[in-house]
Image 1 (cartoon, rainbow, N blue to C red):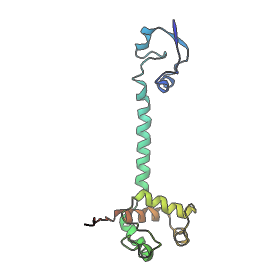
Image 2: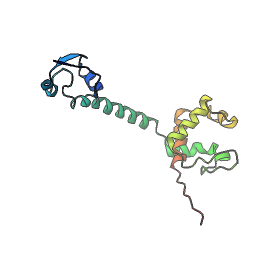
Image 3: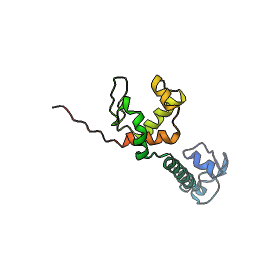
Image 4: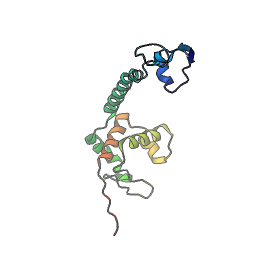
Amino acid sequence: MKHYSCCVPGAAQHAMMRCRPGTPVTPHKLKQPGSRICGASLRAAPRAGHAFVVAAMLLLSMSVALAAGNITAGRQKALQCQTCHGFDGLSKIPDAPNIAGNPEPYLVRQLNAFKKGERKNEMMSVVVQTMSDQDIADLAAYYAAIEVTVKVPR
């Protein structure tokens, strides 16, 4: 009788099936579905994780939906940004970047980095301190919603 250890391809599936390393098995038992010995029902094991993945995706999508910004509210809040970044998100001063059309998650991440002090800029560090998470989400939604067109030179 040959001993099969769980150190074979599919070891993660074996662990989910509670296989024991070194369990004596004969080759004909390797294909018995539903058996709790090593090598059994490897095709069914990956399904066990599907429910977890689906649940995790639902939770993530709900948190994204809750944190989603309001473009209309962001437009009102953008009035305080227009001096440097412009109401249209196109920089009015050389030291300020263009922020129009940047992805919303990127803008949220950058504003939060300024707020936490992970990113440094004298003006931005002062401005973001009074912003709530919803203010940041709204501003990011507004600037991300601005469509930027590019014209290639001839």
